[in-house]
Length: 264
Image (cartoon, rainbow, N blue to C red; front, side, top):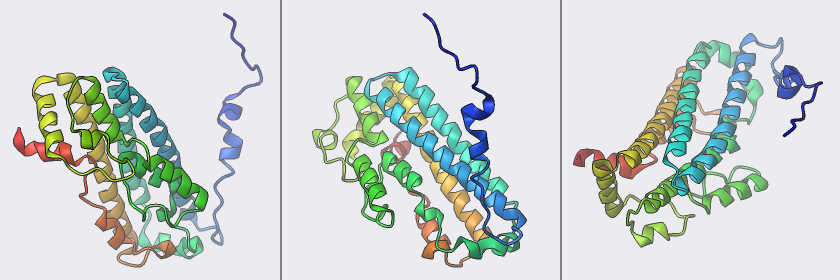
């Protein structure tokens, strides 16, 4: 079997390095030294969000097909990406409040609250509400709505358990997927049985706990970084800043997996 190689392909052309390095365009006069860091960190987050969307989609396929080992691999990668996202906050926190304030006014109405990709990540994780995308362009709203009508990663995990022969409540499996999942005692009973009798499936469930914990850690670090930088000022784009971000803390994604901890 012959393979075709492009002899003109280089590291730079394959990765579109020239185009990539032209995407950082500070708006401040000078420009202010720290604006470049701010742009690169947030562009990097968007790249990681793109990868998370890519990985969650593949994890769902692996779970729904019952492929334990591949699912563990992909979920482990997602967990590691989340650790990188948390670590990037350390870099951003090297910027002092005065340094940020030197260019903050140039951000105008732009805000991280407008990250369409993060909303897609939340939708894949199971968030279902009308507030999550109402401020985004109509075409983005349509894309997010499409995600919210399909299985979340939790639904895919429940399908995985079905493939392994576990009996799950019909009203959970067959529910309208555009409605947020609610903690379920019968599902928790199944999860206990998984941990007690099925080491492979238990590993998969613990990978989900790892991811959940990683997301909560990222939210916490994000809140403290914002508070450290702007205190309790209103956020750019008109958001309530720290107040809104703090409201997202300590809300686990996979609640059933946390609820069973006290029953072991």
